[in-house]
Length: 109
Length: 142
Image (cartoon, rainbow over all chains, first blue to last red; front, side, top):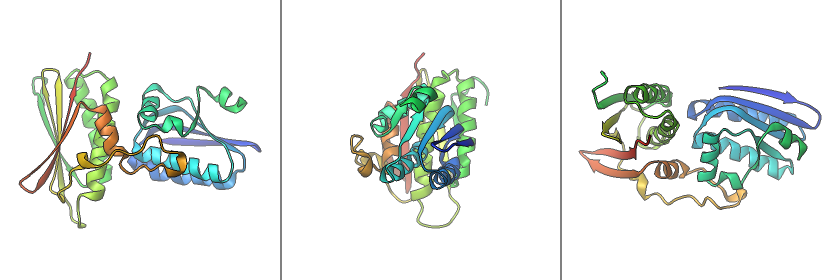
C-alpha cells in the first residue's frame, strides 16, 4: 500500500492507497503515529484509494482515534469506498469515527 | 486446474506473508468459477481473518506448520475449509465483541471471527485427527 502525507499548520491530510491488510498494517501504524507526533491539529485520512481493510487495519484506525481523542484533537476519515464502509458498519466502527463523504466536507466541518 | 474442476487445495506455511498467495488464489478462483467480483473482497477478508488467527495463535512452538486451505464449489454453494494441526481451538465459541461500546472501551480482539460470522452464511468448527477444521460456506449470488 501507498501512504502520502500533506502537512499544513492546521491539519495533516493522509492519503492511504491500496490494501491495508495484516502484512501492511505495521508500516501504516508507524506512519500514522509519526504523523500524530509531528503535527498538532486535525488528521484527515483520505481513503479514496483504499481498496481493502481487515481487522488488523481497523485496529490501527482505533489506535489513532484513541490517541487523538486523548490529545483533544480531531481525527476525520473521508472517501470510504462502499466495501470499506460496509466493514465499518458491520463492526460498529461507523459509530466510533467521524466519517465524511469527501475531503471538502471533512475540511469544512 | 481446469475450468470444470470444482475443488482446489492450497498448502500454506504458517507465515503471514502467505496472505499474498491467498489473495491471488481467490482472484484466480473468481475467474475460473465465475464468481462475482464483489465476493472477492468478502473472501479476502474472511480468509485473512481466519488464516491470521491460526498463524498467530494456533501453534505453541516456533516450528513450521502446514495450513491447508480447500475450496469446493457445488452448484452455487462455495465451501471453504481451513485446516491446521495447531492447538485445539474453536473460534466459533468466542463471544462477539461489543460493537456499540464507546471508543475508549473498543477492542479489536475477537473482531476477526465476528466479521467471518457476519460475512459468511455458515461457520462451523470440527476437531478431527488432532487437527482444527474451520468450515465456511457462502451462497454465490448473481
